[in-house]
Length: 316
Image 1 (cartoon, helix red, strand yellow):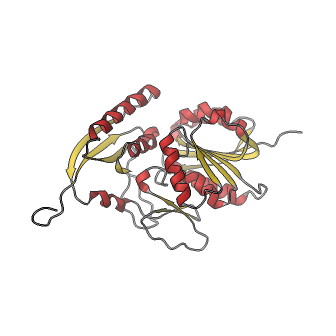
Image 2: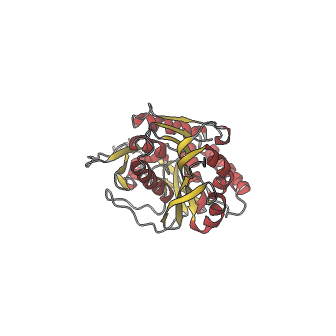
Image 3: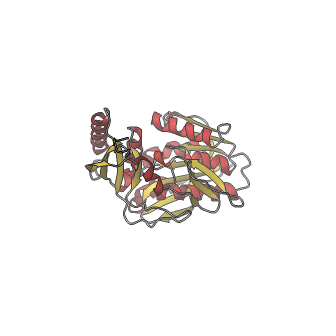
């Protein structure tokens, strides 16, 4: 407090990042990992409950770093991450950012106005931890802290995965005890949704150990730890098979993993792939719309597409 009883102003470094659409989720999760707060896309507007904001842009991400002894190190890590992305994805525009110092004693709480309960599909509701929500009928409520960014249903690729999961698990009664693999789990939202939709066993994998830690916290918070496990390992080293595999990744990573994902999928099982820009669909279809996979359905939202594929039954 100041001498006049006013709240002491807190300083923040506001970053405005220009990001290729394919890298928005990765950049956002990295910003959370290094200590940013209130990470969100420019497309988000303050919400009315259950009202989906109109997407007016898709390549600007805002993040706020506190002014503390770690700020210089955080900015250095961000620059290193950007350089690494440029090496991995030379075909994409390089991430750039502008920075601005702001002073706001309440900003650490104010960013929460951007996140309200969001209905996805018929029954799934994504609820921030601090918001109250009275479930209606058969609502399946998933609690996620939006401070964890793009595992919250904000992004079209995540929303379409949730809609696809709801449709597949609810309608295919031939599979009695779903065993699910979530590749690149992030916050764990898709694996948690599978368990709440009725899956018996769910394995969530991510090569990012920080993401795995976050996923485990969310799994515990949603009371599904008896059915959902999270781990940090390379999916290519995995053994076993699954009734359902969901992979919300980039087109480049999906293409690389396609043989592994097909091998891990049981006959008559489903593969849901998302994180794909419609302009890149030809490359994905060359890798995935081939025997033994057949197209079950596809979903589109703005410039994004999600595929639901089914593996043929083995011939006798």
